[in-house]
Image (cartoon, rainbow, N blue to C red; front, side, top):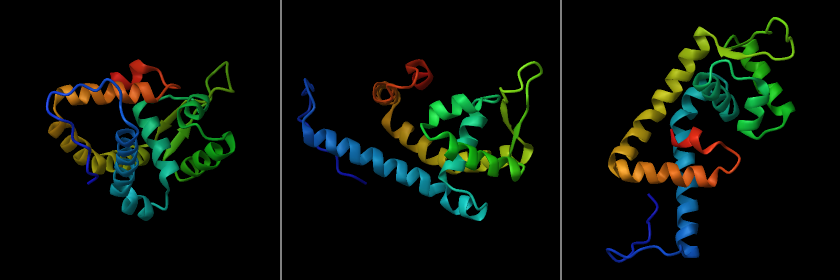
Length: 162
């Protein structure tokens, strides 16, 4: 666990010092690493990587999402997404269905196998997330969401805060 600098009780942050920002950023990096590590054994067993995991998660969370929206949310190249998505389709974890009248838009959905794998991966992370949110309390959770919304300038704030 990363030691967080302690302020005097009741002191208000009029600004954050560089050291506090560095510690917060390091904590975010370590938290992401630990969340990912929860899934690493299951991903290795499925012969998938973190990019596949993020794609499965977003499709599970937004059934019918398009490749364009995935590109926007993941911030990766079309070539990288096409490769990883192609592998997921080939392995019967994701389906692409052309819409009648618009063959270019192909909403993405998880297959039964894909949904089961994504559920298993999310369950591995849920315990850590739930434990952290419960320990922090409701006010801290709301504050955390506001911080994330402020950091994710490319995302819609309502999507992060809801």
